[in-house]
Length: 227
Image (cartoon, rainbow, N blue to C red; front, side):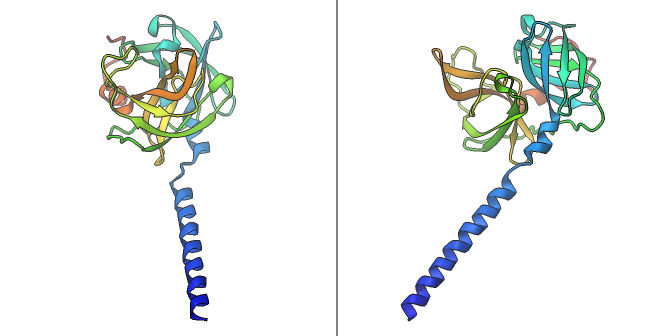
């Protein structure tokens, strides 16, 4: 009898642990639907498209390589927002070295800027990116930070990047990478291939590099092209 009670108690404890673990996992998962409202779809007249995300009420940010010549100033684009609004925008700032471009556009009411984290990140950190792979709009991709150590020299990589494990495809470039607190810790720049084969890994520009540009500072100088 005592042995039976002991077994029942052990089963109950295991069940309680699994239940609590499941609840904890749910609490730690970000509200992807809410985060996706800061994500936009950017398309040029040529049909080329990338992902971007809202910086503030008048600007969205994306990758410079999504524009001809690494972020051609004055290039006009169409910006599609989550609820279907399509507005015209123009590239007003670019940094080809970091592969960043800023599009000026009047962000409609009801869209919040993404929250940028300038703090450190760690290997193994869980993440979610929201973008438009293969023109599938507002797709979420869960993964983790794979490595912070980028071997030098490696074509296309820099120390301002990290490697992340995500399901990625063409169109995810420019996608914000959120931590599970809902803050942007980076931006997808390109997906890593082994020859012609995709690997499931992507290069992510760290948010710290974006923070260092002063783009988010209210006192920053007028937007201009930088090195």
